[in-house]
Image 1 (spheres, rainbow, N blue to C red):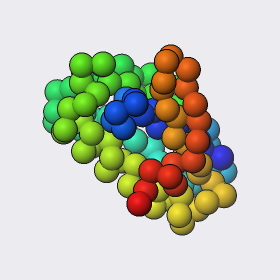
Image 2 (image 1 turned 30 degrees about the vertical axis):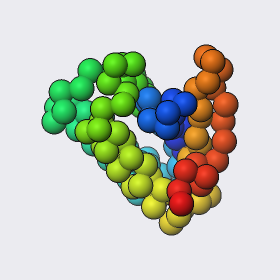
Image 3 (image 1 turned 90 degrees about the vertical axis):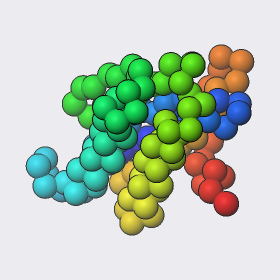
Amino acid sequence: MITVDVYRAEDGSIRGFRAKGHAGYAEHGADIVCAAVSAITQTAALGLLEHLKTPVKLKQAPGLLECWLSSSERASGGAQAVLETMLLGLAEVQRQHPERIRLRRVSVRGGAPKAGALASDRA
Protein backbone atom coordinates (compact mmCIF):
# COMPACT_ATOMS: atom_id res chain seq x y z
CA MET A 1 0.00 0.00 0.00
CA ILE A 2 1.08 3.55 -0.71
CA THR A 3 0.67 5.99 2.15
CA VAL A 4 0.69 9.71 1.40
CA ASP A 5 1.00 11.94 4.44
CA VAL A 6 0.05 15.56 3.79
CA TYR A 7 1.40 17.91 6.46
CA ARG A 8 -0.75 20.95 7.26
CA ALA A 9 0.12 23.91 9.45
CA GLU A 10 -2.39 25.28 11.95
CA ASP A 11 -3.52 27.87 9.38
CA GLY A 12 -4.54 25.04 7.03
CA SER A 13 -1.74 25.54 4.54
CA ILE A 14 0.09 22.48 3.28
CA ARG A 15 3.66 22.44 4.53
CA GLY A 16 4.78 19.32 2.70
CA PHE A 17 4.03 15.71 1.85
CA ARG A 18 5.55 12.26 1.99
CA ALA A 19 4.56 9.42 -0.35
CA LYS A 20 5.89 6.04 0.69
CA GLY A 21 5.38 2.44 -0.30
CA HIS A 22 4.22 0.44 -3.28
CA ALA A 23 0.66 -0.24 -4.39
CA GLY A 24 1.10 -3.90 -5.26
CA TYR A 25 -1.49 -3.57 -8.01
CA ALA A 26 0.72 -5.24 -10.63
CA GLU A 27 4.34 -6.23 -11.09
CA HIS A 28 7.04 -3.57 -11.20
CA GLY A 29 6.82 -1.54 -14.39
CA ALA A 30 3.13 -2.33 -14.94
CA ASP A 31 1.63 -0.95 -11.73
CA ILE A 32 -0.76 1.82 -12.82
CA VAL A 33 -1.49 2.91 -9.24
CA CYS A 34 2.20 3.44 -8.43
CA ALA A 35 2.62 5.21 -11.76
CA ALA A 36 -0.32 7.53 -11.06
CA VAL A 37 0.88 8.44 -7.57
CA SER A 38 4.44 8.95 -8.82
CA ALA A 39 3.31 11.13 -11.71
CA ILE A 40 1.06 13.28 -9.53
CA THR A 41 3.55 13.80 -6.70
CA GLN A 42 6.57 14.32 -8.95
CA THR A 43 4.63 16.80 -11.10
CA ALA A 44 3.70 18.76 -7.97
CA ALA A 45 7.36 18.86 -6.86
CA LEU A 46 8.48 19.93 -10.35
CA GLY A 47 5.76 22.59 -10.50
CA LEU A 48 6.97 24.05 -7.23
CA LEU A 49 10.63 23.97 -8.28
CA GLU A 50 10.56 24.82 -11.95
CA HIS A 51 7.37 26.81 -12.54
CA LEU A 52 7.05 28.70 -9.26
CA LYS A 53 10.77 28.70 -8.38
CA THR A 54 9.77 27.76 -4.83
CA PRO A 55 12.57 26.55 -2.59
CA VAL A 56 11.77 23.04 -1.38
CA LYS A 57 13.58 20.21 0.34
CA LEU A 58 13.27 16.97 -1.59
CA LYS A 59 14.14 13.45 -0.62
CA GLN A 60 13.81 10.64 -3.14
CA ALA A 61 14.51 6.94 -2.85
CA PRO A 62 12.83 3.84 -4.28
CA GLY A 63 9.25 3.95 -3.01
CA LEU A 64 9.68 7.35 -1.35
CA LEU A 65 9.20 11.01 -2.23
CA GLU A 66 9.24 13.77 0.38
CA CYS A 67 8.74 17.43 -0.43
CA TRP A 68 8.83 20.24 2.13
CA LEU A 69 8.25 23.94 1.67
CA SER A 70 10.37 26.40 3.61
CA SER A 71 8.43 28.11 6.40
CA SER A 72 8.43 31.39 4.44
CA GLU A 73 6.89 29.70 1.38
CA ARG A 74 4.21 27.55 2.96
CA ALA A 75 1.44 30.15 2.70
CA SER A 76 2.26 31.12 -0.92
CA GLY A 77 -0.91 31.04 -3.02
CA GLY A 78 0.79 29.45 -6.02
CA ALA A 79 2.46 26.76 -3.95
CA GLN A 80 -0.78 26.00 -2.16
CA ALA A 81 -2.65 25.75 -5.47
CA VAL A 82 -0.11 23.22 -6.76
CA LEU A 83 -0.28 21.15 -3.56
CA GLU A 84 -4.08 21.26 -3.28
CA THR A 85 -4.33 20.18 -6.93
CA MET A 86 -1.95 17.30 -6.17
CA LEU A 87 -4.23 16.34 -3.32
CA LEU A 88 -7.28 16.33 -5.61
CA GLY A 89 -5.51 13.98 -8.02
CA LEU A 90 -4.40 11.64 -5.25
CA ALA A 91 -7.91 11.59 -3.77
CA GLU A 92 -9.26 10.47 -7.14
CA VAL A 93 -6.69 7.65 -7.34
CA GLN A 94 -7.69 6.65 -3.80
CA ARG A 95 -11.38 6.70 -4.78
CA GLN A 96 -10.68 4.31 -7.64
CA HIS A 97 -8.23 2.08 -5.73
CA PRO A 98 -8.99 2.43 -1.99
CA GLU A 99 -7.16 -0.78 -1.13
CA ARG A 100 -3.92 0.48 -2.74
CA ILE A 101 -3.47 4.05 -1.48
CA ARG A 102 -4.15 5.77 1.82
CA LEU A 103 -4.14 9.54 2.24
CA ARG A 104 -3.51 10.89 5.71
CA ARG A 105 -3.73 14.40 7.07
CA VAL A 106 -0.97 15.23 9.52
CA SER A 107 -1.43 18.41 11.54
CA VAL A 108 1.71 20.04 12.81
CA ARG A 109 0.91 21.70 16.15
CA GLY A 110 3.47 22.53 18.76
CA GLY A 111 6.05 20.41 16.97
CA ALA A 112 4.08 17.17 17.35
CA PRO A 113 2.38 15.82 14.22
CA LYS A 114 -1.11 14.43 14.72
CA ALA A 115 -2.45 12.09 12.04
CA GLY A 116 -6.04 11.94 10.83
CA ALA A 117 -8.10 11.11 7.76
CA LEU A 118 -7.89 13.43 4.80
CA ALA A 119 -11.60 12.92 4.15
CA SER A 120 -12.23 15.63 6.75
CA ASP A 121 -10.40 18.11 4.48
CA ARG A 122 -13.02 17.81 1.75
CA ALA A 123 -16.37 19.53 2.03
